[in-house]
Image (tube, rainbow, N blue to C red; front, top):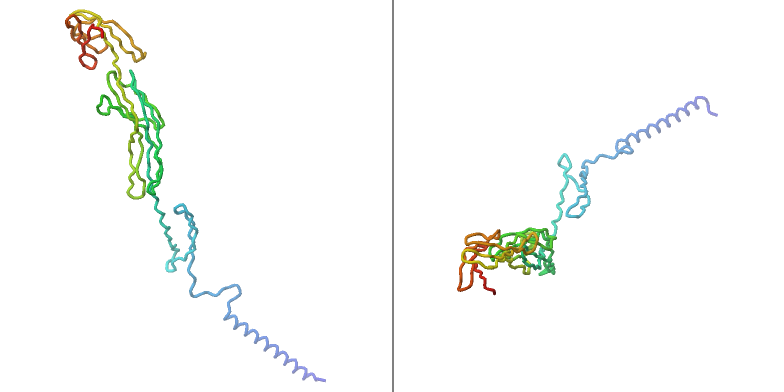
Length: 289
């Protein structure tokens, strides 16, 4: 049996052992806290990774360029995206633009000329590896020539028109018409294009002479008087009208534009010398032809 003194010493020894154990474990935990980071906190790296910049998607040359993830310049304060140049577009092949042309015909009457035409489609077969395309007409152009002279009138029509009536013709004159297609024609390419606006001539014939609007017949008279039968064309009624005139040399014949210049006899035939509305001299007689 232990005495009370021995029991006291034994209890004190256990207390000392337990105290030393607790202090040793606390020292180990303190040492570990200096070398290991706290849970949930990552250690700071001396060389941080490059910042990342995202470029948005773009539509370039009809294609969508996806977003790219590229590093920014680490030596600047802000983000500096790296620009990626799109590839150059492929060169376009040259195209030959060709206009349609007209096939036309017409006739000249008493008080008008009528012209009609049809568009003829061009040959679009490729030549020498070059594609051919139809050029859209912009207008129809009518050229008119009077009495084999210069072009005295140009009529501009809608490209959908297929006929034309000219009511500005004059009696006793000849007219010739040509039908052109206005538009662009040539080679379309990126370098040195040759496309230009032109009036493309067609094929056909449309010409004639407007008859005289007055027909004068000498019915009788003498050296000082003339009895004349005048037939005049009325364009408003589109018909001929006949009248009898009594004229004297040097006087106009009604409103025809003609003038009786003089009367004379050739043997036994009475003749009248006239100047018509074109200032041309004519001789008519009572002799039947």
